[in-house]
Image 1: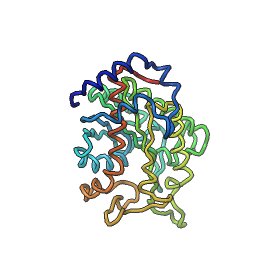
Image 2: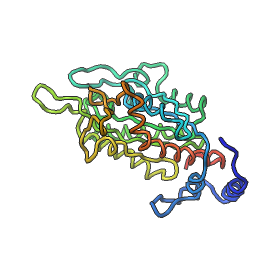
Image 3: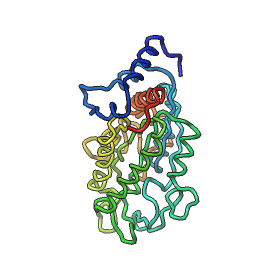
Image 4: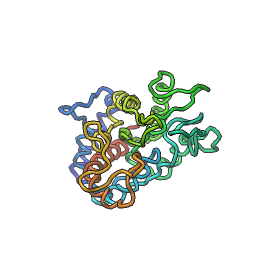
Length: 292
């Protein structure tokens, strides 16, 4: 981080004297009311560490965006994982295949994502954690031994509790949590010509609504970036932006075959907000303001 200007140091000292967790809780962010920490963050410069977590959609997006990180004073650490979002255990159906949850989401894994996230926080001390999940949470899957999906109240509540758990882990030292909405997908159709249930807009909306609910609970530490609206304008799947293919042929993941082109298109849309939210986390950490 670059050396703070003397006037900013004075502001930080003054703010540190008056801010507390309870004070921050009283804020409700609106476009016309920005709290003191956000005001300070807008004027900060210098590299911040962004830890990317989530599933394979996050993995491919993070790979592409990392190529443009230096333009935005970001150090992106892409630790997203194949086959694992937030839900742990049970059976998962994708298209015609049914298999147990895998990787850090396996019921039998020695290390599951909560433990791994905690380790990454201790290792990298990020100012912002970017979480992109939802692909596996919108699939048909078993929960408490029964087949269900995210439109059903019990599983919906479970996913909400997993988001809360992620928040508790990654923000314990003051880092911001930036939630990316799940982008729409077009992975094909079944034998009858109907879209696969995992691509359902209803399920997509059910998951993304949980992100905004968590943001409303912690308006000074949780931020939502609407990636879905960026890459799926007006709710329609688009494989390209301009002449640049941004999605793979599977209709789900982000393109990595021409990653520099993807970074050039998506970087200016996505990364400035990562940098700002990272500076918010940076200020919180300097003021020793943890979960609020």
